[in-house]
Length: 437
Image: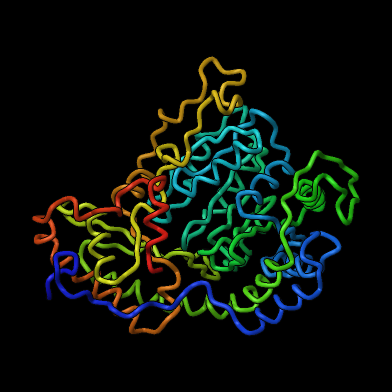
């Protein structure tokens, strides 16, 4: 095995992986048509493409109604508001997710309560949810993470027992199915993101899907400055905001939805090949199969770094793998309550001290499985690595094997080799701009 690239050797991979996002000529034509029409915004009316996309996207996931919005965080905020979350209500969220999941609860006036995750899926542990329920709990946000789903059958049973709203965070789960049911269609609402890295993207954007007409009408009103919904059968009025999406974004998203099944099948096929290859490498563990997944969705391919000893940290392993030409991350997500991007204090969010003897202090949170995933174990590979050919998959596996084989040599190197891979996400903007992927 040749010398590690991080120590001056030749990298396994020197040619680029497929780029992301991708577009077609049809996308360009739709954008040109919007440009020339002069009808650039105004969702849910008078525009047409955003309405068309919302209907198609909801139907694709098995829901009756869809409302496109400005981004994924706002989708969660609107769904929580429409779902009846009031100031001071508790909402259970996973400790291992993007900070926006918990931030959306704060923005809606609620109190995020962190529950630990399942070690085999990195999604909410339903038993931990059960233990986190209090008389204040009004909702739970299951996050379908990276390439796995929450155990929705068990979670829905707990939610029904305690009369909790279920708002699915599907920012990673476009097109996925759990026991034949589409992502976002199983709870009261499902929320999606169309940010640049997502499986469907318009640069930014989001959507809420639901089969509850009352909730759909309130989401539309929340997103459209409080105006009545297009259907308005329930006649409820709220103080809304402007969460609207544009026709330019909808034009791109229609094309993204058309291509989703083809690209998802390619990712799933290559993920299966990668899983087989990684399973043969000592010290790394692919996430176990989840039989309930009836249609795969892979936002990132995640595996676990589990060597017999800790001579080389996960962050140093990731830095070495990245140097071999394999784009990857370890601290992709942190335990939210420890994240620099979640400085939630009671002085800034008074719902954290409403009717409490002591304010909620997130510094006291402990979710050991989430912390192990965030700081010791998880390795994230972006989805576009799976969009090429089988040679790409072989290169990834060869690079992982090379680094694992050379761990003794790597352990003798300076700890500083981990470099920016272990830095907090609050300090990353300059670094991310300089990356080539």
